[in-house]
Amino acid sequence: MTPLPKSASSLADLFSAPRPVRYTGVECSSRYLPMPDGTQIAIDIMLPKGRESETRLPILMIMARYWRSMDLRVPDRPNRALIGPREPVADYLIGQGFGMVVVDGRGSGASTGVSRYPFMDEEIADYGIVAAWIAEQPWCNGCIGAFGISYEGATALRLASTGVAQVKAVVPQEIEFDVYADVAMPGGILNESFMHAWDESNRRLDADKASSLFPLLVRPLIKGIRPVDADRKTRALLMRALHEHQNNTKW
Image (cartoon, rainbow, N blue to C red):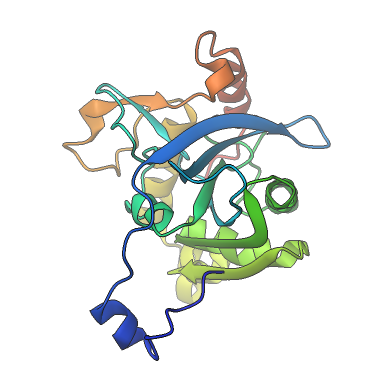
């Protein structure tokens, strides 16, 4: 990963004098990666615009359950990172010299397959395969990290268990370490309100509809899941994915 500047001896020093932006603009592309069982995993690849072709970068991963990226009813922002339902940190990190890969988890977004339960073995294995693929790309310097909040933080944590040597660091934030004890049954009491809201949100997302948990003013701008580049005209694989998602476990 990128080291601290020599002048920064602490985090306080680093944030009182933030590093200058190295790049302005983002080059975005998306594609499917096939898994050994035929499941197609959708990923967005975002790299700094204007980098030298031989430049290799540390890559940060986000592994999403709630869509990696959205199609909007307004034009894409030029030279900006693709939009997903998460904090807008990608533009800053890419400007600092990182690349980013954002993944739709198995059974969600534009990825095919079925989600039987959160963080199932096949889902986590997929992330390891994606990380190993990233490590082989000419734009990766062999250092991969992952971060996220809530579900995406938990997938970052679990990426570290896949044994991919190039995964050097993960930053799991506000995570569900034990889904049963932390979320579903805290203290042995069914967290019914949350479970119903989470289930209703997932059902909408898996049907290509904006979640009722998204901000009210944002929802009318959302068309649905962003297909990968090669599927934008026909949306055939996206339609296949949405059909398969109807077999996801309901809560």
